[in-house]
Length: 362
Image (cartoon, rainbow, N blue to C red; front, side):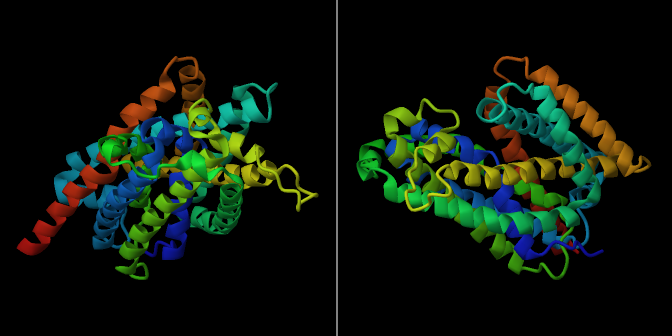
């Protein structure tokens, strides 16, 4: 079985999955927790999660043409394998509802103030589910196409923002007395790096090879550098004291930019947010795809179309219900950290150890 997902596509899958929502709020979150040392905290976190990426891809490379459900059943038995798959379904379901509500909230607040969130969700969820039905190979091609524009536009916008910002707003860059706070803030930097576990739904092939391990590690580290550019440029534009008051700090910072040499595009935020929301869209879609892949293996006799339809209906209902629950977003960003560590590091790490030991015994 050939996965049809190249190492190049893996780069864009990681980029858009990890950054799809995180870029919106990461500047505020890091400024509030790490302050002037945000860049240091993000750098350390990116190194940690580069190692996590190595664990995930190393495990996937040991079982060519299979996804996690298949080889977890081989390694820890059918009961353990199904339990692991259910864990991922619950985890991804929580994330997909969170991301769906965040997308609807941002669109309603900044673009469609008179449109109910339910209408936005009703328009988006069927599209997410349709692409999920098509599978990971077709989705990977979309990631590759949109990812190119995302990198170019995103980097250009933040480099320009960096040149227009006030350098004094990010000084001092490092204070030895605050190094304890910098390391403590790693907890707040974890959520933006969650998403590496999405690679577990990709059945790797011989074409991916060991090069995919290096590609994944370097990509995660590069995403960390991209986060640093975003955070520092937004702080330089808005100031350390003001940025903590904006939940969508990146949108506020971009709208504050001035580009007199682009008379035809005074509103640069329109271009960035169009590309950014395309990335957000794909980030949500691949989580739907992950849930679909696990459910298709848990319920082997069910048709994929029926699973997708039921998933869409349940996620829509969950969004409407949980949108009325106060503190749901805070709950996800706090509890989701621990669930994400389990999904992205602990479970793959334990399975990798078991797989290595069984290989040595064999």
